[in-house]
Amino acid sequence: MLSTIIHSVGNFLFIYPLFMSLVWIISGLLFYIRRERKPMDIQDNLEELPFVSILLPCYNEEAHIEKTVKELNNINYKHYEIIVINDGSTDGTQDILSVLTRSIDRLKVINIIENKGKANALYYGTIASKGEIVVTMDSDAMLDKNALLYMIPHFTTPRNSERVGAVTGNPRVRNRQSLLGKIQVVEYSSIIGLIKRSQRILGKMMTVSGVFVAFRKKALLDVDFWDKDLITDDIGITWKLQERFWDVRYEPRALCWMLVPETLKGLLNQRIRWAQGGMEVLIRHRSIFKDFRQRRLYPVYIEQTLSILWSISWMFYLIYLVFFGFSPSMLFYGAYIAFISLIQLMVALFIDRHYEEKLLQYVWWAGWYPMVYWMVSIFALVPAIPKAFRILTSKKSEYAIWESPDRGKQT
Image (cartoon, rainbow, N blue to C red; front, side, top):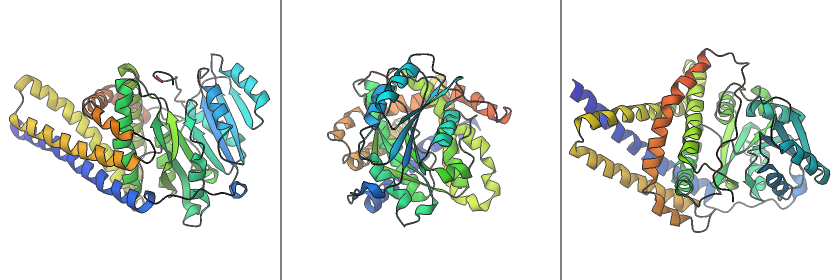
């Protein structure tokens, strides 16, 4: 009996990543051929583009906020404002912002006395904004000068534009001197970017990239803004929009450069938060199966559930192997998965090569990637599971407050 269960678990551990890699590769290539291969014309007449409000929620960001605001003040767009929401910072963030408001006319600052989380800060920023399009960014991110020119036309062009509720951009890693930085360059291309292309082709997305995303304000009003009690505001708002049948799109040409963790502790804390946020959303939105109109969300929900089960199964399977020994078939399974993962990486880097010169050089770091990514993801689940299930007992009025994450080596 035990051997049968172990054999079944082993097959699941092998078949699931193999199947999903094939899905991501095929649908990612379809996205590239249909929507990305041909150059996109940038609109020359900036006067015709709508007014945009860029929101920067921040907490203790004295090291980054000045550079971010100054870079945003020089992007290639005509009508926009910058709203920084200082969410109870205890460092010198408020003083820096006070100085910046004297020299940058389009800058507005909202000072919140008590730290009540990113979602709450975004709510106040949206209420104070003038734009019909609201762009939210992390306060340490650097926006490509033409990013908005690729994003905003999704809301204004005739083709189904009225149903577009959000457009997520393409986050790229800035700090890549360390091993972990290089590995995450591989991750954001071979996993995150390819999955977003794949999900967009298949119909629905698991999440926008919270580091850089544009929203139609009317859509935010329709879903009653972000859930303030969820640890990952970006996953939560994505599901709320799609349940209300708003279209969520991915625009890979809209680049945003971000800082990523470069310590194992920082990376683990980030992945615990991601894992917790994903499970919280699955728990909160489990009722979609009662409504057949939500059927296009079913595959996303099931795939995310299977990925959690895969990580849990691998953890227990690894414990079994430690006590009872490795079987020869494990070497075959591992080699096969490594081969398909390498194919997936090469396809992703081929697609993303348009956005970064010398991107293919990071293929040499692919060997480290499965070990670091999967091990960190598996260990992140252990503390994330009990944290996620708090959503069943907590009141929705509770705030998911934040702390400044590990941003690695500064560049």
